[in-house]
Amino acid sequence: MAAISAQVSILVLVGLFAASARAAEPSAVEQRAREDLDRQLQEMVKTPPPEIVISFEGLPGAGTSKGYKLVEADFLVNGQPLAIPGIDKLNGPGQHRLAVLTVEEGSYTLVSHVTYANESWNLFSEESGFLWKLTASVTVQVQRGLRARVRVLPAINPTAPDPRLKLKLSHDVTAEMTAPLADVAIPDRMDAGTPTAAVARAPVEAPPPPAPPVAPPPATVPVKSVEVPEEGPVAPARLLLKVLAGKRPVAATVYLRSASGTPHRVAMDAKARKPVEVMLPPGEYRVDVLAQGYLAQTRKVTLSRDTAPTVSFTLAKAPVSKAQKAQVKKEAVVLPRPPRFAEKQAAPRKGSTAGLALLVDMLVRDENLRLRIEGHTDNRERPSATLMALAEARAKAVAKALVDEGLDASRIETVGVGESRPKAPNLLPRGRELNRRVEFVLLRTK
Image (cartoon, rainbow, N blue to C red):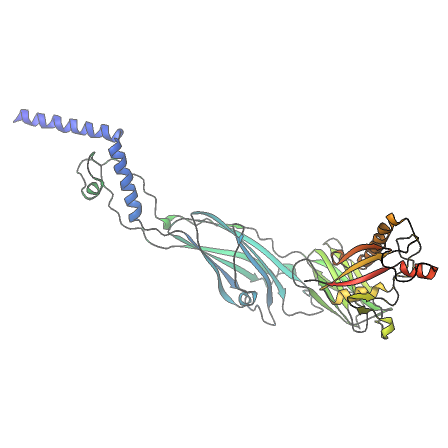
């Protein structure tokens, strides 16, 4: 019996050494079995893909006569814009869902841009014409089985010493697990030649090898949020406005238009003796002035925080009689006093461009209008080869005069016609003078 026991011990040791050798150098059969087991374990662990839920918290009091009005909003996730509800809906208080995104594992950055205006507009308020342009961003790291909730939070700071700091923008990030991991029986060891499914059901009593690493549940993965310092509202620039008729102030409406955003409207009082101060974000603006009984005017101004420019308008009375007004005939504008040109000269004669104020008034009042200026010559000014160039130069000279008055150059086009369409016979000096002219054609933006 002692001999038999010794033989059994030897066989057990040999079996253990053989198992150790197989564990150290798994065969191809063992490797395939492990891969099949890993695949089955992945299928048993039903973990949904990551989600990101983005919502916007309406500013308390927004959209009311005593609050702040949301005028612009856009949101980007990793540079891609979100399709969001209308501004009117976001303007209301409470939480508004922007998007529910099913994404891949990884890092996602939300950039939020919102613009507010003071709904309680007051000519004498320090916030008149002021916009709060707020930008903030946050980055979240998501993994399978995890839902990240991101809230965009505009807020009012009632104790802010500066109106530029009245509003602020931030993000709040929370995380929750979307589904628990399924319970999985991990086999203690694997024997060569044993089917994978059988191994998973029948544990062996031999000392187990180290278990393969299993990823921790997604609920234990923290959400990393990096709040980028918000840009905050754009510090305003100052602009001083004066609108006069002669030497006296006049009641008027001033519109300040930038390349983006809604126009800023300022009401000018006829009793205002001092320039009206307006605070606006720095940038380039077109300033349009309209007053009843006067010709409209326009200017261009560039605002910065370093200076406070004064833009002054001296309005001219609008003509009353038909003979003094601009006439539109088949899309051509006929001025009562058109520009006149000396022989072989491209620039208009001095004092002959006053009638251009009627064109400025027409284009300021209707933003859909454009203008084509056609230049003409008489038949004796230069050799015919250069008449077209002279005609084009006359059209460009008048276009420059209109641009100097504040009209946008993109609304004006020029063309040279030359001597091909005379208005009067070229035999007489008076006829040649009438042929040296420009004509104005109204075009409408489609």
